[in-house]
Structure formats: structure tokens, C-alpha cells
Length: 212
Image 1 (cartoon, rainbow, N blue to C red):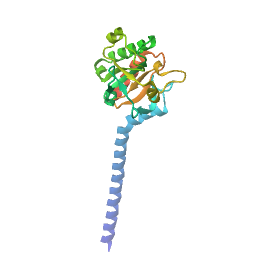
Image 2: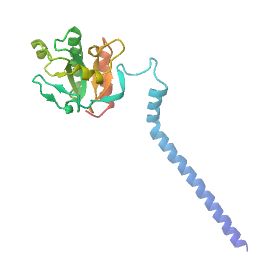
Image 3: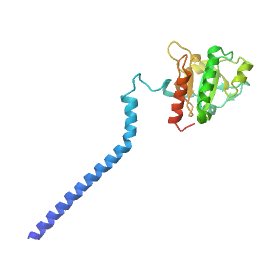
Image 4: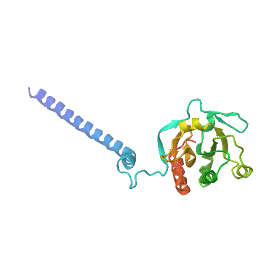
């Protein structure tokens, strides 16, 4: 009669041991997952909870939500031919907006965009510079010579205003914008922007993203 009791006790002991082993294994798995997730958690806390003094870590204003190219939006070249929507995709675009006459502010933006691209070193081929012209006025020969790699496209200013937001008290031509390789308008730099800070933001975008 004592043998069944010993068997029952043995079974209970084995069960308890198995339960303990399972709990320990579960804690080990949870600890490994926590260690793996730590960088993600730290990043989340840094950007969304413990923000650095001064707020955002970027200089340009993030456009949220990002704005894809609107349906029916058309851009033309000097001959009047429509530029395919795909022209806004595949590269990071630094976009300036101004009439064809291009005043001092316009020239400054074109220069900044060109220099920001040039200072990205090996990453510069991921960037294109774009001048969206709000009229069909001819471009001065010296500008074409100075900025041969900048796409100078003509756009309807009314349609553009529906896509490109501005800061209070400013106009579209006061800003340099960024369009990501998926064709989304995602950042706007302030009026009279500091080119070194633009350069830093673009460098961060290129490091953080493997698209484009």
C-alpha cells in the first residue's frame, strides 16, 4: 500500500520541478527579449518622452502627416512637356520655389541646396536639387551655367500652394523643402535658414534611412 504513495509523491515532485524549470526558462526568454529591445525602448524614450532641451532634435520642421504628391499635380519642363510623377521619387529632393526671374533670396536657396548636396560626400548622389518655378519666365544664362544639375521645372503656383505648407507670416518662396524618395513632402526649413543646420538635418536623414 505504501508503493502507490511513493509513486504519487514522485510524480508530484517531478511536476513541481518541471514547473520550476519552465518558469526559469520563461524568465530567461523574457530577459533576452528585453535586452534585444533595449535600444528601441531607449530610442523611443529619447525622442518621445525625455526630449532634449529645446525640443526636437531636427532643425527643419517635420511635416506631419507627410504629404504625397496630390492627384493631378503637374510639373512641366521648358518645352511644356509634362514631367512624370516618378520624377519626384527615388531620390531625396531639396526643393526651392521662386519665379523664373529668381531674386536674391531665390539665388541664395539654389546656392544653399547645391552646397548642402555637395557636402554630403559619397551620399550626395542620393540627393537631387529642384527649382519649382511659379511662372514660365526665362532663366538667366548665368543661372543655368551656375546650376546645371538643378532641375528647373514649371509648376502651377495655386496647385503647389495646396501641397506645400508655410510658416505663419511667410510664403512658399521663403522656404527650402524636402521630399523623400517615396515622393512625400516631409520637411520644411525656416525662412533665412542656416545652411550648416540644413546640412546636418540632411546628413541625419541619409544616415537614418536606407531608401533613395
